[in-house]
Amino acid sequence: MNEVLVTTMLIVSLFALLGSGVWIGLTLAGVAWIGMEMFSSRPAGDAMAITIWGSASSWTLTALPLFVWMGEILFRTKLSESMFRGLAPWVNALPGRLLHTNILGSTIFAAVSGSSAATCATIGKMSIPELTKRGYPPEKIVGSLGGASTLGLLIPPSIIMIVYGVAAEVSIAKLFVAGVLPGLMLAGLFSGHLMIWALLNPKKVPRSDTSMTLTQKLSESRHLIPVIVLIGGVIGTIYTGVATATEAAAVGVVGALILSGAQGSLNWTTFRDSLLGATRLYCMIALILAGAAFLTLAMGYIGLPRHLAEFVTGLNLSPGVLLVALALFYIVLGCFLDGISMIVLTMGVILPTVTAAGLDLIWFGVFVVIVVEMAQITPPVGFNLFVLQGMTQREITWIAKVCMPYFLLMVLALLLLWWFPQIVTWLPSRM
Image (cartoon, rainbow, N blue to C red; front, side):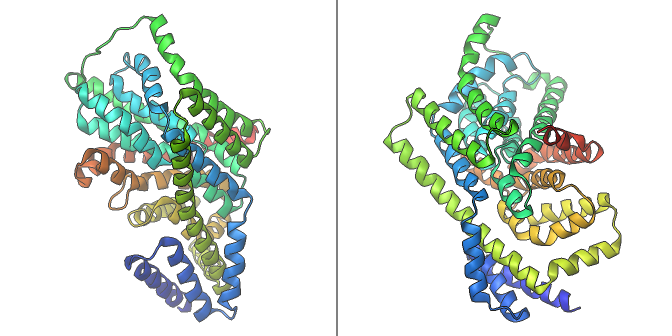
């Protein structure tokens, strides 16, 4: 009963602070301070200082600002325009035609961004005007973009995977590699949905406006070469063991600078804007991580994770039922918090339970990332919904409705990963 009272008080404190507009990172630290002062004998002040310093000075976390900076550099280059030119000739033959550029473009950009919001904004700026001009249905343009842009969280390098790796103390390099096949599987499911819709509604798909020979298609494909080389450099160095995730992030930043310089879009303004943009975003993430680290410590002193793990273990839930419960929990939580906050706020409590259930932490990391992806297109705080609303000026309920098929496809993906866990575990085991 005591644990229920403590948990209730901390949850009320959390939502009271969040509701009053306090920054998420400061809210987490504040709840931790309340918990330690009221329910533990350890002085909160020095514990907070030591924990926040340890969190901020983590070498593993160095990969995070580097990948954020890489995404910011590419966000300000001609990369999206080049990708559209390279992809468009090849998708014209598929049912659904140019709608597939949203799926393929998001998949490729996800591999050099790490952020679903950046993927959504970058690909959307390119594809929404182009596809609208060609007469494609707006619900399919926006829906396919909203669904596919969530791949920015799953296909490496992924910011949220770094956060999970630090929280769960598992190999970030293995997490990155584990996300490749599930990411490609999701992209295939999204494209498959578009093909089935196009075959059922042939009159809604505009005719192809160009007819290219194979030579012309290959010529246009040269625009994809720089981004493919960059992806290969980042993921290849991790997979082969040549570089750690942090070192691969540095390779990515250097490659992005070279790429933007070769495109002629690197100047002092774009360099400064990319650096300031990355600094602002990382400072927000770092503050959340620092607050979450202190909250995790406080939870440990209070003993809540141990009691919760004992409670869940006492229920004797099968791993499958446990995962269904956790998926519902994260989807509901995603209605109020962003993905990074969801991970750092809950891992300290959830991980002992997951470990006790005998689940592989690499596999569980991919599972959590896909559930967080689902939350990105779930109102009222679906980040991708906000990005799409800003670009289209549509009602957020309409955007959520047209993204719903992709939400259901992610549910199908989770079932496939449960039935065939090798989709996640095979590549990491070959490293």
